[in-house]
Image (cartoon, rainbow, N blue to C red; front, side):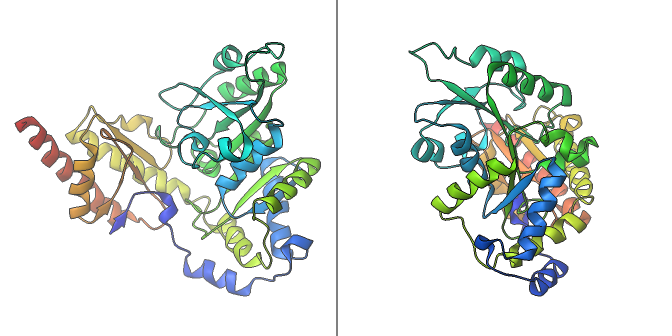
Length: 348
């Protein structure tokens, strides 16, 4: 199966496994794992912050980000309507933080300063939840892997500062945005209060995310990490995979982007209404206005995995384990699947 369900399907390369086997380790909770310490320092510097902490997952990075910035149950977070904490984190923000997640609408996943200003509540309004945090996903996920325009992000951060709101960056695929835009990671992430990057997607590591912020913020994050069961021991084995990914798997993200564009172009030849190939910026392709379950089934019969986002939207994600030959097969399979399902739908 050529798995385009998600870039979470990547597997450690032989070279990454070798790096993991050689890793120097120690007790991560006591600051005695040199490989973890190196990774955290490196990611903090990369993203323009003072300190970092290794977490098992990016979902924990979002949850701790909310815990850091939302002080009291019933306080409000502004984020996109399809952002990961609303759609894919099992209601953890409500159950474990007590946050009100207020959705901002946008077809691309990118909202603007005017929306933030309009949605934020007056702190003196005793009837409304007190707005505390603005959370941004860069690049976007289920809306199609879009990269925020730099000026739009700057505007959102400026609006948040004017309103006295904290800011958090969900950077699950931030390095995809860096490669696609040519804008360095610290320019994207340096202006927010907290940010994290994930190593288990296009970077190909088996686990791990690093949350960054000020030294004081990360000291507080450690308490939440302990509380949530995220504290580790000899985690240098995982950190070594992440360091290997930073050294060897970042520049090659451009290959994933090119293959995603190829998939979009192939789909557009058959179903031009389903996708605009020129809007595919990173490694995510979303086809809309199709019979998504039927296309997914037709693809599976041809050895290609995909993810349905609902009855009429399908997501395809390229990654480290999909090479040019796999992409060529997937292109052909996608065109056949679209033709088959479009014909079936036309027949009623």
